[in-house]
Length: 75
Image 1 (cartoon, rainbow, N blue to C red):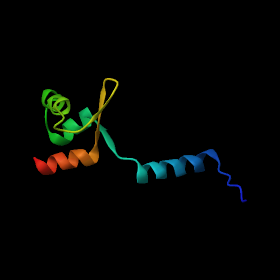
Image 2: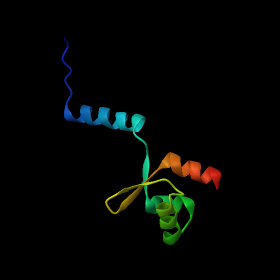
Image 3: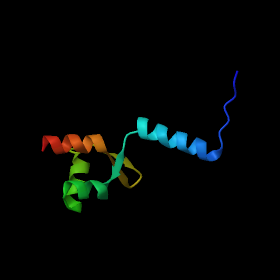
Image 4: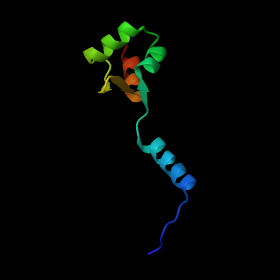
């Protein structure tokens, strides 16, 4: 069996490429606020109500970019 050898930078590049292809792009609440053009109160109301799907990690909200696009298309 052929053994693959990578140095750290090659490994990092391969991992970054994998992430870009397979993992969803997520935004912070502040980034989503900028895109939507809404204020802080409106943003957190949308998140807490579930109108804009998001995940809370500790105290931070993360919004999937595809969900944000769907929200914009609907509204």
